[in-house]
Amino acid sequence: MPDSTYKIIELVGTSKTSWEEAAKNAVETASKSLKDLRIAEVNQMDMRVENGKVVAFRARVKVSFKYMGK
Image (cartoon, rainbow, N blue to C red):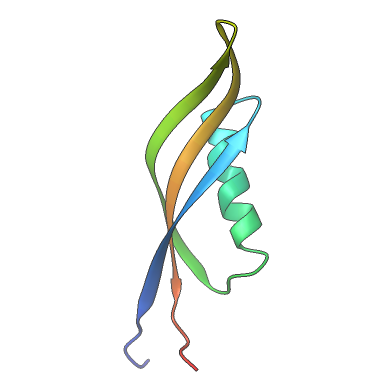
């Protein structure tokens, strides 16, 4: 097996129900256009508030995938 290189990007996923769903949405959406996703790490979580009520959850996620070059 040859040595490999991985690229890390940061994504923000959103959900109306939970931080877990927000993180899952970020990873599953990214997997549609990125190949060979390896690791996802939640770095930050926050909420959007309107009129004193939580209306959305956001998860900032770092995702790594195998770098293929050109």
